[in-house]
Length: 182
Image (cartoon, rainbow, N blue to C red; front, side):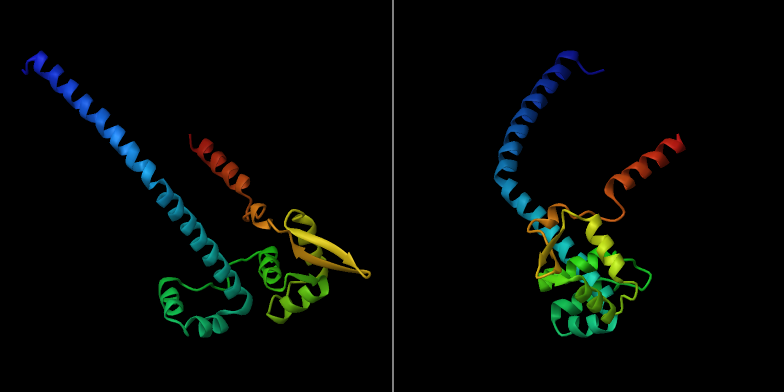
């Protein structure tokens, strides 16, 4: 059996090394923090761009999307890495509306409906578009000019953009499933 004093001495030395290691690690972490934040920002930018690509693929179709993406090396690599959107993949109407309004900046509801139907979103009707706009009051801005209603995105609409299904519903569902398994 090891000598108690030897073990205590080894514990003391290890504790002293750990304190130094913690101090040095914290200092290194502080210097790396801007890089970590930049990496997080890049991950978010990549996720957002990927989401936009998937929305546009669903909006304009696989064939047109593939013809555009195959023109560049990065697009070819993207196609190789990602299985393109399938017809069963659902994209919310408000997501299509957001993509459209990021390009045109402002449009009448009739113009939005005409565009979405022209690209194959058959279920886009005036009532559904107006309903989407009413459900997302922090994202979509309504302006009336010359007796016409124009729709645009609020300047900071991304802050209020919510995923579908709602985040709180997913958390609630997970908690419900976890509690039912106990």
